[in-house]
Length: 477
Image (cartoon, rainbow, N blue to C red; front, side):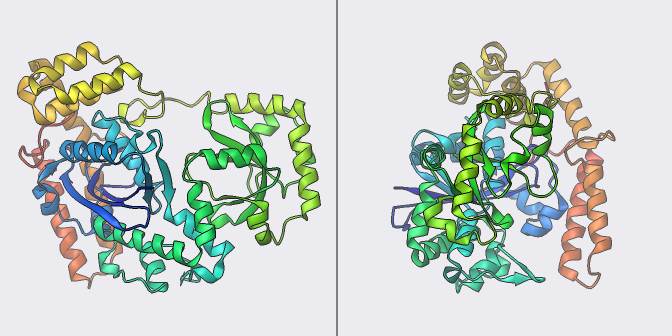
């Protein structure tokens, strides 16, 4: 089995409006020995305004961004090629399923690569944070969890240091340092809790949790900081074949089995203990057989009661009919995003457009604009093609498309309208707030903010970023 561990440092939190600017990968063999190492840094596209908060956290300075040797497209091309070459493998990160994976998908999507490369046939997806939290509860002697401000902390640096792993705080939020620390922690978990580690890593491939949900009457789901709960599978989601909905057996099913559809739908958002949970079988759920993890359910009903409740849930066909309809309609009224980068999950890219994306990368810049306009059926991909053309080969764009792109870029960066991305005025206001809230005696931090504000103000004064490190960028469809 091959493992690919990775970490990304990004311009901000939301993957729809931010991009990775640093990436590190470790390809390891089945013994977790490093076979290959890759570290990349890039310039963000001109329409992206990095968050001053993110720059302070990562220690990335404006000169680091402007001086990176790769464009964002070039970095993503290298990452896409490596992910394809390294598959099949288990893709591993720390808090990656909720952060790094989302940023990676969106970055691949907007650079015209298949967004789900980590989920190619034969691949698995694992998260060392998920495994650490489960092992800390199920085998507490195996992992020391530090307390910060009186609460357990699973931050990578403190967790490593609490368990004797060398990881200085100053190295945190550097992609290569973080991914090396992730590997060290993964090795430690495997060494201290080998049987539980094996059960959890098996869930990195969706077939294992899916089989348990089909075959086992009672399972134990460790739900991060929410603790462990007894569950039974109800059904596969009618809108997502990789998602199961389970019933929390600590909730008496008599409280919901006879309820109408509207009441059942409301239970998904109820405060407190919810009777239903969604489980993505392709996202390494911390799901274990009752025989392996039932000992942690100290506040749950006994096994006999749990089995009786599971039987009632599984046998009520009328409830299943109503429940399936609720699931089918659950997101039916969700408004689509007006911006193409916000519509990754709107629909899958067609097989023909996947072929066209690959061909787009193979042909010359002088052919790409017409190719995309003529052959892409997906309007999102046409928009991304235009953006990439404007960033890298504006001379091959029609004059009107270029004019529209430059006008769009000015508006994107400076619009006074309420938009979900960070504009230059909003970034300058954020920097000012950070200065006001910070320690006025922290000279290093103040110098960082000085450099960030000067850089942002220069970009705003110019309205359109300089060519060179920041090149021409996007038009929105």
